[in-house]
Image (tube, rainbow, N blue to C red; front, side, top):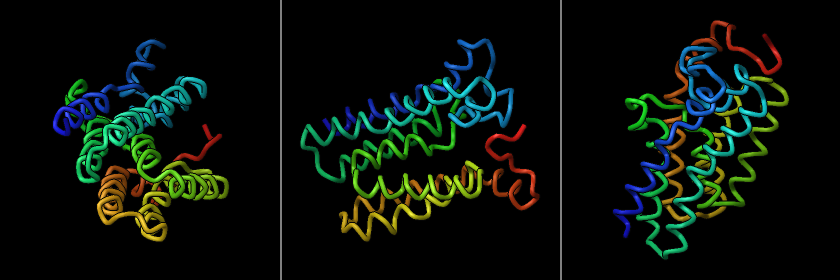
Length: 193
């Protein structure tokens, strides 16, 4: 069951929501804006409604398999594997030649199923940082850094904390280009064109 759930989770995570939404709007999302298939680029290039749709679907890709795995009563290790598989599916989707998004929304879904109360704190961290910085990447990195600390402070199991460390490290690595633009002062802000 754990192996089947992990495979299912990877395939679900691999569904390229942003690419599909962009294609339905008549564009290849990989060739406009930042070139990323995530919700932020979709919102900037195709519209906020479609960006919100992409965000919701990407969160669901992480939440649904972990929620189902928990309901099946799988071990924490197995559930953690399912969550990581969904996340890696989004980052390296088999349907897009393994060129996926940055994983923030899918990681949110995974953590929302694993650690709902702690995840609400992380959403608040994201919200506060984005309010003051107006930069999505800064908010994503801040929430990623805060994740292991928050889960540890809520006394979640070492397995869950370890998952959050892995998600955080991968998200920061996926934001290397954003970090370079932040240092150059060229990273776009919300509402900027």
